[in-house]
Structures are given as structure tokens and as C-alpha cells.
Image 1: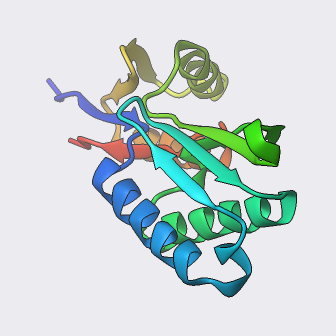
Image 2: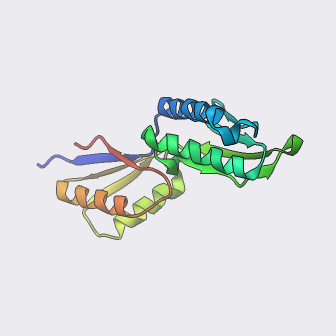
Length: 164
């Protein structure tokens, strides 16, 4: 009897790398000449909520660009950060909030399941909390499923783990 092979589809980011990138962005914002007078502020709390505050729209856009650049350089996929639209804040400042998303939601898990089931491959798909497990007897079918999931953009970063 052939043994079953499987892999997990997960969406994870390194919060240590996020913290490092935000610290680098704070340092760059403090030293840039065009942002010194704009009262730029980068806040990050434990519930993965990012808040960018600046004195004007241009400074806020520059601050967001700095943050995204530093995230990319630290190896954090920017699909994990969902930024809201800028809004007016107290004292004539402008604020933009963002949320770091980890884990696969049930809706995206269903979309992944539907995509794999449409291929008629002999594999099983199970949604397990915030990850999706794909299993089957043939490794080639599993690799084909990986390729299909990589090609489609689900709006979040996806990684493949525990391939066995």
C-alpha cells in the first residue's frame, strides 16, 4: 500500500523582521531632510496594527513608501500589509492605518479548495484552522497543485510547508 504524501499551505510572516523593518524606517524618516519638519510617526502595537502619521499628504506617502521598501528589503511580503486610505487626524495631520494579516481565512481556504478540485487531480484538501492541508498518493499531483496555487493571486502571501 502506497503511503500518503501531503503538504500544508500557510500564510505567515516573521514579526521580528517586521519590527526590524519598522525600526529602520523610523531611523530613515528621522534623518531625511524632507520629512524632518513633517512630524512623521510610525507606531506598531501588539495586535499587528500599524499607524503612520505625518504633517501632510506628501510626507505620509513618502513615509508609506519608506515602510514598504524596508519591509521588502527585510524579506517580508508586502501582501501581508493591508493599508487603509489616508484620513485627517488632529492638529492638521494625516493618518493611515494598516493591518498585518497572518493565516488563511476560511474564504480564501475555500477558494484554494475550489481551485484544486477543478483540476480533477486525485488529491484531498482540508481546511485546518488557518492553514490548508493537501494530501494524495502521487507527488506529481501535489506538485501540480502547488503550481496552480502559486500562479493564482489570493491577495495574501502563501508558503508551502511540511512536504512529505
